[in-house]
Length: 232
Image (cartoon, rainbow, N blue to C red; front, side):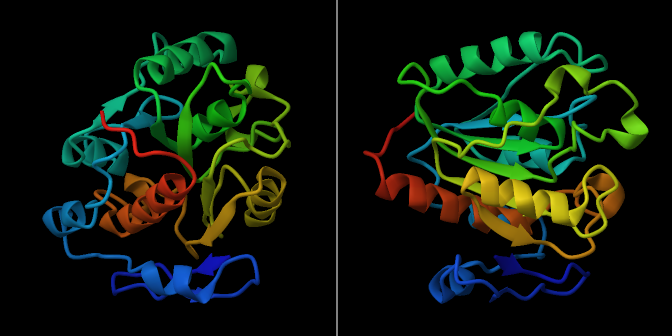
């Protein structure tokens, strides 16, 4: 696990579990110097297509997923027909189509998009390089979302077939920190603790969120070490 204290100042990173090496923690250098500086941190991602996978109601222009989509030349968004009434079957069809169109992609998912990625079918048909899953939504205990997440339940617990990083907040209203940590363990994922970071969205102070781009770069390194580089 990597821990970081979220504040206006530069967060710190330190290993706190044998599951994450000291070198990995040292390499994670969150950057809070603005969107341009954050975009520079994305170097090393050129070998991979990037699929942005938003959650409920999509991600607005000020959301970090939208900033990253504009900053990363190989990025595209997985669009949905109905963002307000999510249906697992319909949403999965769109995601699978995008993966088939962009083989070897890194998935960058937020909230309900994380549950969608976890439901992906296994098999050689889908070529996925890795997934960065940020602030997963708890589809088993949806809380303020009511019954909107019903079709996504239960959350898959099997080990994911691709390198994965789960990024969680200790103050996320849509999933408890403990539940997110258990998911990361079940999925065989690297776990990153952002501290008190809300739902890691615009409302919690994460607009461009350049501090997250190094996590994506580290994921790309892990993916590249286990497969030939794929250029978009």
